Image (cartoon, rainbow, N blue to C red; front, side):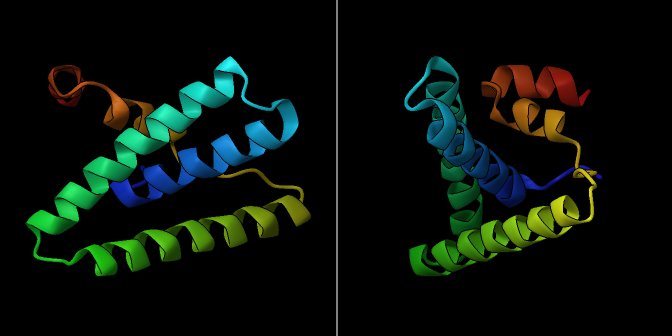
Length: 104
């Protein structure tokens, strides 16, 4: 399944955390942090457009990250990997003009 914008923001933040813990502020970690920030900003903009407050957005993003982390830990314990379409997150993080190209 394709993750939504909130899930993608969380996925890339969690990926950054993992890479940063392992490699410090490597080029890969920096790239993940940038992509996570772009997706977080877009998710917040979307929620604001839907009428949610900043605090409500914070809560939803935090809940999404916590749920994904719990799911990842459970799957890891069972020897499974995630079934989410991570590539979709990179498409969502692309500059807006490239997003439209991928969506059509």
